[in-house]
Length: 621
Image (cartoon, rainbow, N blue to C red; front, side, top):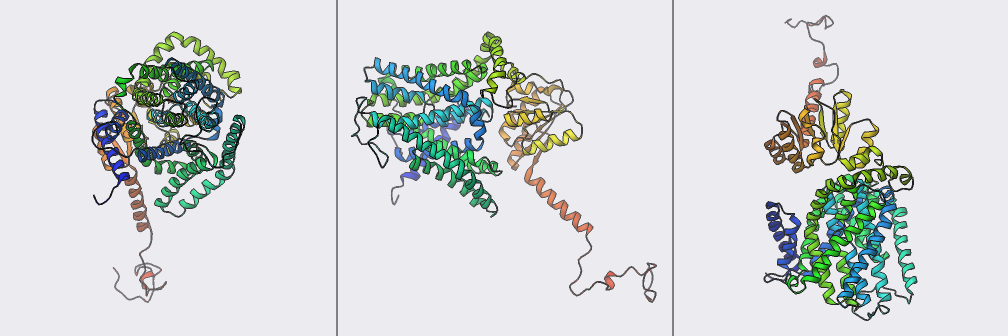
């Protein structure tokens, strides 16, 4: 190698090992992110062999966080965020306080100072952005009420940690630390009191929000529309990435807001543009790649031998993250009269820690507040909680029937009350917050009474056109959909909806596939569509299955699983163009030669026409 290439080596080693171990994990039905974490451990400084550049890996991981939060913002709106403020703000604050208290208690038992306990507790109180969002996306919950609450909760946690990062250096001396350590400090420091620092921080965050709502709301959609009209897909993709990364970086440097929060606001502002769907598609591949690098970078921080040296402290830390914090979140959601299912999902979402925890740990060590043992416990707790998070979600799903059977009656009663006054207060200010939908949250989707009907899965751009045609033809059908906004529109139009993910056995069974005549898969995800096809064939071998695909490989995949017809969009577009050309050619007159003029012999009527030229002496045929 002629020269050192740490960036390329880090990306190649990280993605290569992550692919191999992620594929092995998937083969054994283990979440792939476990493989990504192990890949990070193998290329980290605590294991023999190749060692990737740790600082570069962390910066690459930060890009993944930015793109992920940007993608979430694209599916969010300011109205969605405000609709959950009544639970997200007090819920996150109380949960942070409770988790911090638990962390402080463990620190006291380990003989640490009060300042160390505060930093340690704060680090254990905030969930990982990447892990939470990936879990919600895998379960298609981002656009559901539960997803909105979890994301709103996450935003409040991020804001609280931004305040903590700014305030801790100012109060380090009071807590027994030092401000003379080698830590990054923002420019233009003034001798503010604690309340002064807090006021300045809040003012900077407010200024950023105002700039985004006033300037960004006009500028970002205009830029997208301008680039889209150039017709260059390359420029459009570049503009999306430039806006996401540029706004996140500017928010951090100019306003002291976290990169993730800045990217979220950029996506939320861009979501108001009609081109937001295309923007989400263009940024998706990079989001996936860099989110993998995030897990690799986390694995690089972990020293496996710490499991033997600090077994009991690590287990206690893990207990606070997975059990203590989750139990607090569960009780808070129940206290706000939300269904048990929602409380279980929120508590499972928050049962891990991540990137902000690492930043707080490094800052605490740099300020002399947190001992290095505390940082090691935070890293170990993060790794183990991320690995366990899929199992926590699975446990929450298994606990749901038992919890509903034990407490469902009372929960339904309180939820019915919440549907009235609480809705007016903004607690359940969503289109689906009704007694009918509450029953579906608690008891699962009710089975349909339709027979000989069409099951339409997905009601986006393609599914909407299919559904409209079925209605015009008076053909019975129902829709399986999990987006709250789309569900509300379908209810308003009088269309029967089974709410949830069609890949879920209970949801799909509620659509009565055994009595259905056909199944139409209007979703673009071929892998998820394949799971539904297998489920449909098992329930009703004679059902007619129609699916969509983007590539020939997807067509073969879906047909191999049992689809009768797979329509590829590009092929249908080409067929439509050819039909137009053929029809135009048949209907239009023959092209005229360049030297011919109107009225020449080629335009004259036939010789045997009664209106032909009487002087024409050519033989009649």
